[in-house]
Image (cartoon, rainbow, N blue to C red; front, side):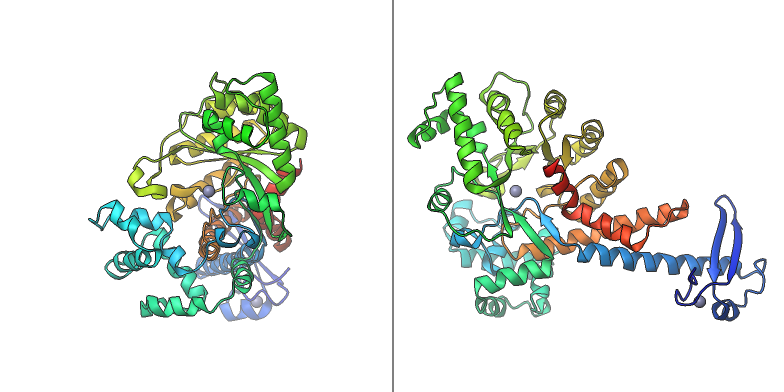
Length: 467
Ligand SMILES: [Zn+2]
Ligand SMILES: [Zn+2]
């Protein structure tokens, strides 16, 4: 057994101490450390101080172990809006895209009295200039989305203290995209990225139809919002593409919808199907959304062994003037999800919910249904205060059978800050859990800690998909 203080020499002295209300504490010292601390016998007055010192030592060693494990585990980022480089300009990167991220657009209007239209008429560079001025220069960038830009810039080798946007633009302009992708993935420690792929997107669809050599780091997810949420507009498009569907959901129409799903699942090699839903989502229900889920999506999921990802709680265009920054959120009734999980045990559901108020209920649902896998701190919940709370709650209720985070990155560079910030919180929560376990008499080994970190950062997700 190694010495609790130096952690180098074999410990020959074993000291027992009763701490009032906390039971017997044991620690182990080597001869030189024991001599240095003057512990000839355990009843000496300095024993309590020594116990504190030993506990501090153990804690910092544990923190180092956990941080190393969490920061070195390769990540499977299971939901992003990034694209395989073959999609060209659909893959956003660089400082102007970072600054005009819709999270920051929402925030800049807290300080602007400019009409929305005038802002949208500015070029992207001018919008970025304005956001930089308002959110970084005239006010300290303390919000999570602002701090993210700073973390990213610093990691990319800029000195944010210079507050020099022109220099940052110039520096980033020197990068070639291919190298920049490698650099960002490397800095973020991300091995695989799930994209969000929509056959209904007019820019994206033709690229898939033409075909291209896939970059294996970019995995596809089939997003079908228009199919489920705007059936009457989508049916004519499917017809145009050669699927014989009609507005009513007859058996033939359902068969054709399933053919459409099959074609696209195969074409893009989808890892899962996905949709984002309003707080009012109901299931079962007579409406087209629930009917299509029941008759087409779920049987398709079973046939292909694919999970169905539901992102629940978004209110679209709460302030339409803000465009993509104008979506809001609401508390959801998770009865719909409970019904899905209970009635379709053969289907797998990947779920994240937007309202903080729904998080506890979601964890409890996952305790009831093993076909439910919880992931990520989505959008408005992706602020350290809430991420920490959610991560702790999930681990305390579900152990390691969750995927605590996805990046939701829309701009390649964001992978850096999103994962740096998230890993820090995940590590912090784990340190606390392992310390509490050790207090109860179970010490996780370094190999076990590494295994657990991998589980949280993609392993549990892969296992769920393969189950
Ligand atoms: Zn020692
Ligand atoms: Zn997203």
